[in-house]
Length: 162
Image (tube, rainbow, N blue to C red; front, side, top):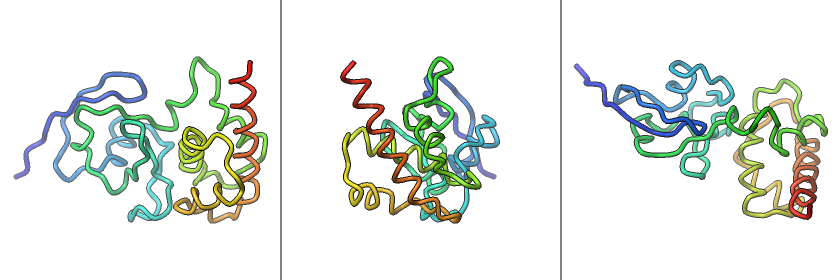
């Protein structure tokens, strides 16, 4: 019989504590225990980007990592990006560019685009495409996603200049 382990971490700026089983993945914990449905399991192999979350500020495939790994960390999901009822500029840009069709992959793309812009505030189209190669859109909204990155970069630049 396996014994649960108590973990404590910060989830979207809120301290949480819970018992997790040794085999429980982060994506299962987020969706089943916290009812956070933004990050989604699609491939189950860390190849599509749909389950992307930040752990201590770095992107992570939540389908591949075990929940106990989160003990003592800071976790941010797509649900934590909007602050005070205001969408993150990347979220706004995806809406403005129509950078989604079915929307299944959109949260993972948004998380990766935010991280891209945190490190490269004004990426070229080639840098955008290269950075997002780990995210798959089965509906092929790629041109609109690149447009969304450009819009988000401009929004961030305007906010910094103000």
